[in-house]
Image (cartoon, rainbow, N blue to C red; front, side, top):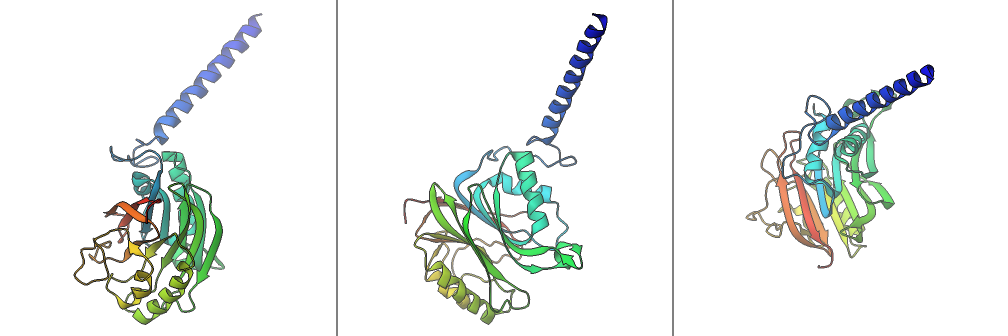
Length: 287
């Protein structure tokens, strides 16, 4: 009997210790975890679950000395249903997804539109460099994933990707792109013609991305003919009132809508990229 009591007491103590360790871990990895440990705190007004009719675009900056914990916290602050990322290394996106899930309880599916294997940007072994390009995170599953490299990327390979997923309860075609760098207007014009032809096949579409062009740039004409900006005040005019989306106060990042009406939008500067995050809340039943 004495041996049995000892075993019972030992087992109870082991379970208590395990329970205490679980509680400690739960405190550390919760939304209030300190930045020195697993992640920084979310603002008090931050949402705690995905917003089902919210989409976002963000060029996350690469190469940049940025923590993926901080990138995840910025995304979790607005918790979009869908987010299109540009300048994304696969390794970084995987870590961002892990932090979103483990720290904030936000679970995303992922699809990649990588068009470049780049060791200098994404690390990895020189003979097996990391994949670089676009990525889409969606809280709902994605189907019909398409990845297209533009015939001419300009100074660096560029392309677009497209998926079908659920936004605001409605199946929607979502595109994500990154056009050629600045001072390559003719290249971007060719790229937007390719992109516009793909978007035009869908009555309901969302086009996210870094277009490296201001709203009045001629190379965006084909896109404006098909879609509108999520900011109703933003038009292809040099005197428009489009909010800037970069640290140099230019509007380069867009949420274009086709067959969908905007409800609200926001542009959010972040210390973790030279591009701001842009989100849009959508009315999926109104065009």
